[in-house]
Length: 225
Length: 410
Ligand SMILES: Nc1ncnc2c1ncn2[C@@H]1O[C@H](COP(=O)(O)OP(=O)(O)OP(=O)(O)O)[C@@H](O)[C@H]1O
Ligand SMILES: [Mg+2]
Image (cartoon, rainbow over all chains, first blue to last red; front, side):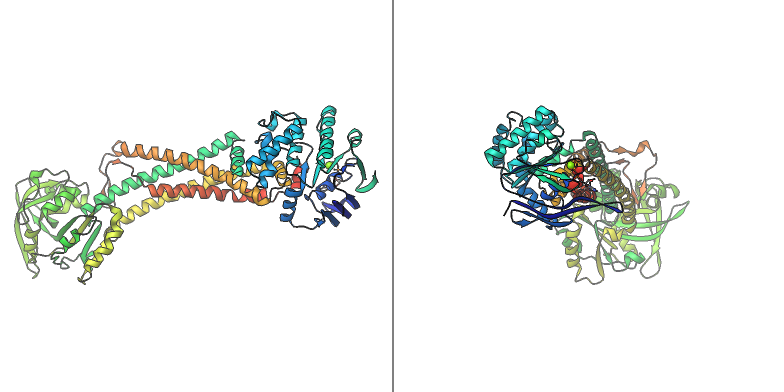
């Protein structure tokens, strides 16, 4: 069985007295260790799909299987537990808690998992050196560049060794140099640590880094290479 | 533990807002504690002088005497006074006889309350006698020396050393008269007392009515007014064999004083409640604003795996810390204010020239605070609870955040 399986997933948002079909009868399976990108124009349903895989949102119809568990109909408590144990999230920007230091932000999910302080520090220190963040442990997010902030977000997502890391347009607020750097790091983590990544973008340059490119259009699967 | 750390840091994000909220909380706690302690001190002083001049903290009467003040309802205490004196915490036991009568000088006559006392005990306890020089005090139980209220003295147009006649009813119904001599004058500040008080040795007064051993009141003064509830049951135990007698505490025996204090304090309590409410609304506002501002951030926190329960706890911890800090600052300021009000006090003579009477007791013109530590603790805890209650709505709000929506909007 695949790591992630979407079976005829449809997501409909109510909008006033109308309905918006954000994702329409969408099926896909993703194996462990993949490095996939959801590509598509604005409004094509990338965020909606990532949110559903990431247990932030649930499908109107269809099933989503994560490591052999159906999550499309789990309750809120279950969903937050799944997010904590199985999912690593990286958003476009303002990922971090502004009052906490870089290291504390990276440790946040481990803290929620009640991992003890020493182990937390160890893991985060390793990740920081891997991500080129040495020496920035005690900086506040506001004292970090956009690229550094995103790397701290990657550290946080990776620290708890989740089943899958979901990154919704992680480079959208970065310049091309920082974007390249970030993508290179994600690729390294994917290759060296076998972490499964799914990210989204509408930037052709970013998309070209994906080993598998899933193209979306109006909530439909357009192509899958 | 980490949540406390995060909550603490969150509090200082909006430093000015937090400081203003802390100031409001601490300042009201200080005011409430200081005002309460001031009242506590003033009431304690009033109760103290009230009970010493009046019925004592605890008192023994013949049944119905309190209601009817019928001088026929006297009793022979035998060795009751001595027995009561043995109880732990009892400072003094004062036998008193109260006989309404008429005093006549060569020029005037006035209604009086002839009060028979045991001079040695009364002298040490009764605050009315504080200003009286030693050479003016009664020397024996049987003497014809009398202490008069200063207004009575004036109205009877008497001077020290003058003789006058007291007439009252013997228990047989006949009128009896005896001659007394002005030996001392007291000024209590309470008009009704200064106009009617006539204090003489117990035995002389008792002999006039034909009940030489009888008294009307056995006033019991305690070392501390809080001992009331410990001593009363023991007193009642002692009184069991005396079925015609009853023992009670000053609250029942002096309802005027008790009710005056209660009424006065009730209005103050009302102000306290309003203050607390206003402050609570301020705290709700602060917490709500800080939750709304962090809408997206809370979305992220939920997205990375925090449960809504933990998010709500975070908001509660923020309120708890706010409350705890205010508790510490407010109580420190409250203690400082109490200390000042105790040592320096408020001199009412700046505001009013006459002596003040309250519930039948004279006010000390310098109001001084007293330490009501259990109450200070209690009110601090109330403040903490209110801070937590103020967090309920903001916490519910935070718990309702949908992470997907919160992250989308920003
Ligand atoms: N909460 C919502 N309520 C109503 N409509 C929504 C909601 N969320 C998304 N939509 C709609 O669903 C569709 C898909 O949105 P989605 O955000 O998934 O697209 P996207 O590919 O991530 O776009 P973008 O590149 O702009 O981020 C859009 O038409 C959007 O307007
Ligand atoms: Mg999107």
